[in-house]
Image 1 (cartoon, rainbow, N blue to C red):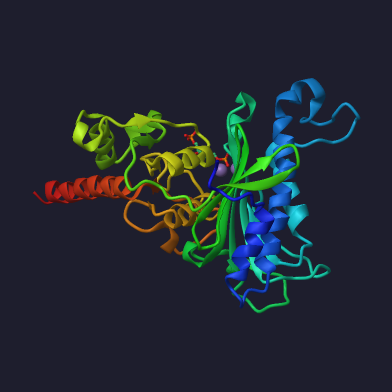
Image 2: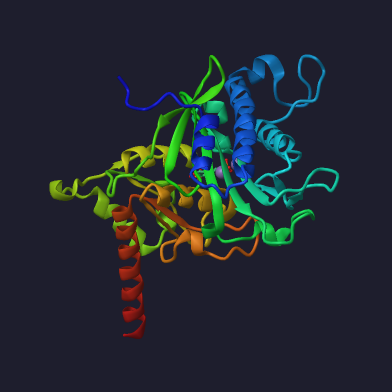
Length: 345
Ligand code: AHG
Ligand code: MN
Ligand code: MN
């Protein structure tokens, strides 16, 4: 018999809230609204394979109605589900250039929500796992007015909650509100997220590395050396490692969170800031992984301590099991030091 209690996400959030007598319940309601939006997205994702047959995307569907691409559908669904709940003062989405302040005719709340509505969208047509990533902050500007860019541009350490939903063989919601990482699986029959993974801990060291190796030529010399090191044979340190790379950050990180390992999207000579976005992808994942006992840096600095300058800013990221992330940092630091010695000599 499973040791995990039968507990819905809604119930779990209420129980967590009871541990904090000072809590107003606003964050709980926000998370609840957010989970509802992801259930709708999950349903739509499940229909994605029927796109060409039933015309779910493109300009018009069989009924002559306007239909949207799945990432825009997810974006619109999140905005529509969250703008009038009374908990938010602003939102920002990977799919929208500017921040989305909550209009004055709605009740304006004290939180800010940033999200990547659909992560791994290039995988949709291949029926490969994709996800939604979210990050929540408390506003820093005075209450009552629509939120501003200042509310959205806070470093990751200020996050009050973060998480993702993975649309995979099951739909799962994994979140943290700063008190561990918990995973809930959506029961498709009655549409509830049920606690399935209580207090997830990432192994201190893994046996998996995840990186787009096609970019090898453009990498930092220290990173090249590190990957070669992982491929060498040494039973004591469990090498060689296995490569696993899906190309959906949510799916790659979800697997590594459960099994241990390292996910990397580094800077390279063509992309000096890497590819992934600090506010929608890296900060929320860093919060989750740190809460699970792991580590997330840009190679030299903790992701969550980076002061953001732009909402769509990109950063290199090394994230996962603590010992693995420390090891790649060591390889890169050594290569930097060697570079300095060679250029001096
Ligand atoms: P998105 O679909 O939100 O644009 O994100 C795609 C991201 C991320 O999910 C993944 O890890 C990465 O792109 C894969 O990039 P490469 O194809 O360059 O490896
Ligand atoms: Mn993404
Ligand atoms: Mn996206």
